[in-house]
Length: 348
Image 1: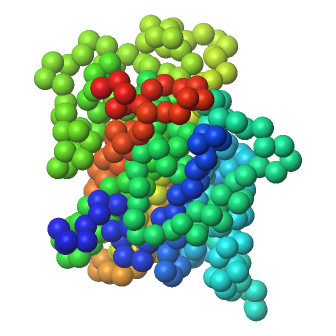
Image 2: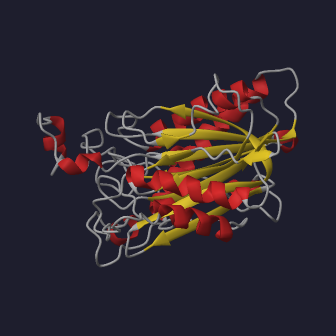
């Protein structure tokens, strides 16, 4: 690995990440920016998504490039963060050219963190648009993980969620990386153990080096869901589920320095979703809004073979699984006003 290796999405040259969060609010915003426009696509798997401008980067959309991507807390209120990012970019002359006008294309996705104990009494002006602008101002090649940005208010069924990132370098100069805000209905650990479902994909002890359990826990496959008191309750789900089962969604970005068209970027996003399935149990439920964006900066061509795209997708999935575990592993012990599970580090 080069000396500059950060194990972060900013290992893709030209990309920057900005994180802003408010500990009183118990919520935050993460933005991905680039030195130049990038090809973008999206794959949506959750049953309760909240998104903006995903149609524009869909396969039927006219737009071939995007200028930023936003991951935000705040549920539907958090979609306003993209307006802040859009305004920030427009002020700098960045955007899709329509005559003399410039319209920044800023797809976004949100997660639900409204019931985690933070002060959400913001009145007539939700804070997310301003947080989007502030995240742009904070953007750099340094990428913090854990209780930062969109991951600040995130939770899992048994421990605090977080923001994670990871990267992988392939032969020939190709790179793939991931950034994820982890807030699922389920869990990322195996039963009541400290072991992560993503353990087979860990590199260099990046989330504790626990590996998989030597003895598989009897309760490993019992469902642990937000809003249920026990795995037994989860297995016998009531008709009227608790309100806080809605506090979910894992939203992610995978990025590569490969030159991809939109259809190829979409395939990268589709394959990367496998990483969520490797790291979260269960995943893509009716109460999750799981979304994976794919970004291609176009520095290295793939040639005629589809084999390299298949390799990119496979490693993107591995890398996203690692990023999920890293985000939860790095989460800080929560603030006093917190109304959610403890952090992994506080339990294990």
